[in-house]
Length: 157
Image (cartoon, rainbow, N blue to C red):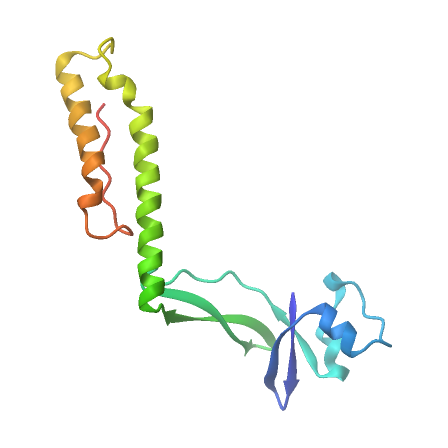
């Protein structure tokens, strides 16, 4: 839980931690974190801000979700979020990391299917060909343009 300092029903400082609150009011004995309510904080000009799970960005390759100033909704101060565009360098880094993840996933699948191409594999010739094509499709996955929207090949039956 975080706190916010309020003046005239507007947040003027956020986030404020319990440690900061105690440092600013050293002579006050605040209740345990889980028990603190707005009633405990009202006389000091603070409110509790209820945490929420941040949403995912509409396009994770180009945007991120960041914490914004909390909003008062029906008397409760709730954590809020906004989307912001990544810089060109951040986009490049994110794409590079995503391709690395795709390659790692692909490598794991290839390792799990190595048995299908071994000379002593129990597969019949036609099935071996299906697995060979599947494995080639995995290798070709990096030919796709967008690492955030990969179409993975379907494993043979």
